[in-house]
Amino acid sequence: CGAINSAALLLKSANPNHPKGLGNSSDVVGRNYMAHNNSALLAISKKPNLTKFGKTFAVNDYYFGADDFKFPLGHIQMLGKSDPVMYKEDAPAIAPGFALELMANHALDFWMTSEDLPNPENRVTLTKDGQIKLIYKENNLEGHQRLQKKLKWMVEHAGCESHLFPSNLYLGKKIPLAGTAHQCGTIRFGTDPKTSALDIWCRSHEVENLFVVDGSFFPSSSAVNPGLTIIAMALRVGDFIKKEIFANSTSN
Ligand SMILES: Cc1cc2nc3c(=O)[nH]c(=O)nc-3n(C[C@H](O)[C@H](O)[C@H](O)COP(=O)(O)OP(=O)(O)OC[C@H]3O[C@@H](n4cnc5c(N)ncnc54)[C@H](O)[C@@H]3O)c2cc1C
Image (cartoon, rainbow, N blue to C red; front, side, top):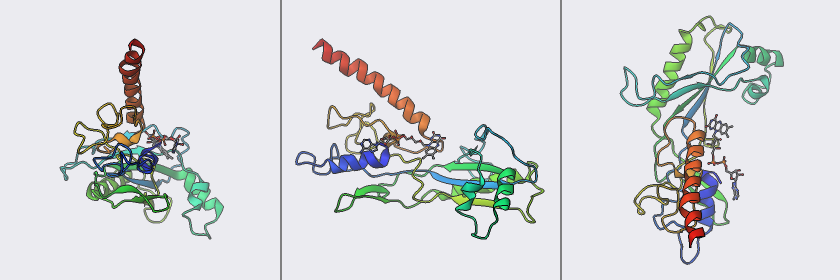
C-alpha cells in the first residue's frame, strides 16, 4: 500500500493476538519513517533550455562525500521539464504569464536527494478516530545543504553565469512534510524480530502469510529514487513465494 498506508493498515489491524498492530510485537511498525531530504532547484539560464527529455542527466560525484566534507552529500538529477503552470503556485499573484513562460523556457530543473536517517520517533500513527498521523522531524541536513551549494557552484561554472535576471536567480525549494513521494522505512526488514517487523523475504516475523512488498521494508533510505529497489525486491519476493510457498503447498 506504500510505506504510510501499509503501516497504517497493520496498526489498524490490531486484535487481541496482536494488540500493538498486526505483526508488531517489536513496536517498529510505523516507526523510522523516511522520505529523503529532497530539494528542487531551478537555475535560470540565459540560453533557452528546450529539452524534451529532462531526466537524462545525473551527478553522483558527491554521493559518498566531497573534498571538503567526508560524509555523504547525496545525488543530483535533472527533473522533468518545468512549465509555467507549475510556477504559478509559488509565484507572486502579480507575476504576468509571459514572465513565467520565459522562465520556463530558460529553466534548468534540478532535483537533489540526500539521505535522511531512520529515527524511531519519525512515525506513522493513528489518531483516536483512525486517521493517519505523520510525525517527522528533519535530520542529517548538513550534507544536503552542502549539496545545494555544490550544485549552485556547478551551475555557475557550466555556462549559466550570464543570467537572464539581473542577479543570479535560483528558485530553490526544500520539499516539506507533504512531499511523501519517497516514503519508506515504516515496516523495516531485518534478521532480528526485536528490531524489525519483516524477515529478509519481507515476510512478517509473526504472521506466516503476511508479506509487505513496498517501500516499507527499507532499513535506510539511501539517497536515490526508491522505485527500482522496490521493484527489484518485489520480483525477488515474488520468486520466493512461487518457489518456497506455492511449490511446498502443491507437494503437500
Ligand atoms: C510525483 C512522483 C514522482 C516520482 N518519481 C520517481 C522517480 O523518478 N523514480 C523513482 O524511483 N521513484 C519515483 N517516485 C517514487 C516512487 O513512485 C515510489 O517510491 C514508489 O511508487 C513506491 O512504491 P510502493 O509500492 O511503496 O507504493 P505505491 O507505488 O504508492 O503503491 C501503493 C499502492 O497501494 C494502494 N493502496 C494504498 N492504500 C491501500 C489500501 N488500504 N488497500 C489497498 N490498496 C491500497 C495505492 O493506491 C497504490 O496503488 C516518485 C513519486 C512521486 C509521487
